Amino acid sequence: MSHRFKLAGILLSAGLIMAACGGDGEDPGGNGDAEDTSADEGMQNMEEDNEDAGGGNDTSDDQPDSSGSSSSETISQEDINHEAREAVDAAMENYDGRLTQIELDHEEGQWVYKLDMEQNSEEYETSLSVDDLSVINEQAETDDDKDSEDQFEYGDAMTAEEAVQTAIDEAGGSGDIEGWSLDRDDGALEYEIELKNTDDGDADITIDAESGEVTSTDYDNGDDDSD
Image 1 (cartoon, rainbow, N blue to C red):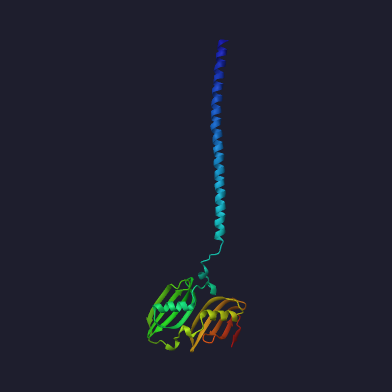
Image 2: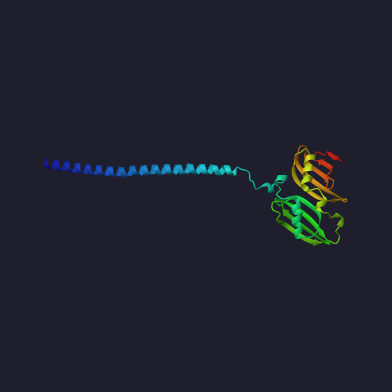
């Protein structure tokens, strides 16, 4: 009987020890699960915050680029920061000559004023940004065959802004500027203005720069009205 009691005592002690060990193992495991759950919830909250922030960024990416006006192949009067008169004055600060041509043109992804000027036997060409009148390109060369009859003063002509508005009115009050030029043609000082997206399609309109009279209107459908 004494051996049985001893064996029972040993088994009981072993059971108590295993129970105690099992309880200790469960507590750390339980704490680990709680910590894991808390960490998972924290990560989920962070991911949701990031998604919200990412959604805001995506919305801003969908907004139009406010600085891209000068990269378009057409432009409106409102998007031109400096008038043609200012471009002429800026060019004359660098070169003392007389105009033979001035243009509004789109080249190399930006809108520029292009001015051709002459002095004696020298020709000067420059391109100025319509945004800030910075010099994009300039060059001078000698030309002994220049024709002084092509020269003019910008003040002799109606302003480019007035000419463009006249052309838009002629085209029915609509249209985007594709470009324009001012020079002499057979002695007459003329604006040639190209418009896109008018009510009647694309239009090439010629205006007498001194009188402001529209001398011809040519639409892409072949119609031609001349006064």
